[in-house]
Length: 370
Ligand code: FES
Ligand SMILES: [Fe+2]
Image (cartoon, rainbow, N blue to C red; front, side):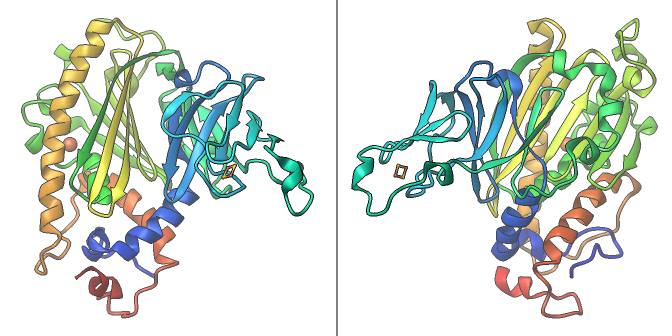
């Protein structure tokens, strides 16, 4: 089994390996609670969002009863995807291949030319496979494997820390969707690294906050950084509902494996999530939420775009760097505590199914990757 090494950082082979990546798709993404949608994207019956979680095509759909359900987005007849992207499917999900028809609760109720099947069909055995779904503050999560802890337990201290922000009550703001030419783990390492802020973001984030006052806390599935803002950047009066660190700065709340929810003292929040598109490319998505007017959201989005570009550049530099045969993980800084939460859980989930051939630590993955 792979271990987090004495430096606290991972063997560079895991960033290069397609075999490791394949295991991640199944075990890490399949086994975790994955953010897939904001409830406000699906206000009406028939509204759906299709996503791929690891290897599994998934659809979240608003039912006729108003409830949200998640299904494997695959037709039980010949495995066609039922829907793609976002949209409204009307009163039923109809497979585009042979027209089998499913109610919004997954029951199969329509089979064209049914009398010509060789054996009698039992529609009750041919409905869609329902997946585990839960929501917190309007954010909808799906757990494909069905065996992750309860969502509220999985989120550890975050519901309490962000409770005063009323994220569920915020309006939807701008969203971003960008490609990055880097392995998703390098992107995550950077997203929750609190050591680079004063260097990479010197003219953006660092100008607004007091980095000397930054504190981190680590859980098992989550890690939080509290970043105090400079007095000049804070509202004259704390926003209603916010107190303590939530009123004095940002709370950057990481949820394993690929979600970062940041609550701001000005009454907004940013939801960021990163999805691998191959073992060397990643899709970066951002959703801005706010209690305030559009102008504030726009200003925040401009800053966010700048910060994203600063981060993408270093991620793509690291991607090229981890190809080097001469790279060994360097020492861990205290402000990289959140990175170790990500890496430790990832290695627990993947390392147990992809054991190294060589106990010296020079894993067979190195051979796979080169
Ligand atoms: S694959 Fe869906 S009806 Fe045949
Ligand atoms: Fe950054």
